[in-house]
Length: 161
Image (cartoon, rainbow, N blue to C red; front, side, top):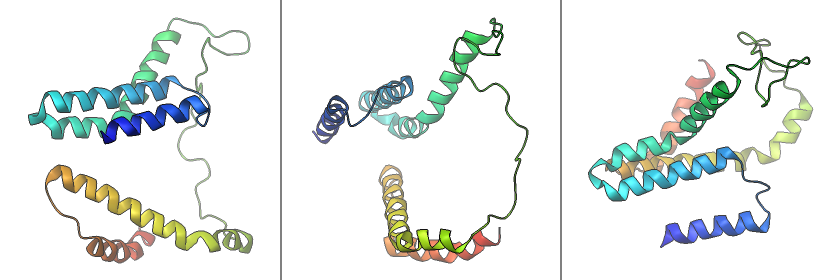
């Protein structure tokens, strides 16, 4: 029932115009989500496999659309301005072009300062919800206090990496 209500709200938002347009990527993502939910109900013994494949649906869409773009453009020659019949990224620059320390000035810190606590709280809640989701699937319990201690213990090590 919860899935049906969630799907209904998504359709209502789409029809109300809150989501500006339907793209091929969106349709493919929802189709893959629906497919793996169906396979989970159909083959419950393989539910863990279907869950992990469903989590990787963004990668599936990227690979599928990359193959589709390659299939469309592989025998085409670009026009005089160098464009194909579909929009593609033509030349990918090699490596990182501008790697270095970021420039942090007072204006940036003043703009970010009031929102840092809220952003940290949202990131922590997101981390806990993802951990609990994986915990439910894999059969273990997550202690949010332990996760909080672990996140703040590893933060100094990330700075020196």
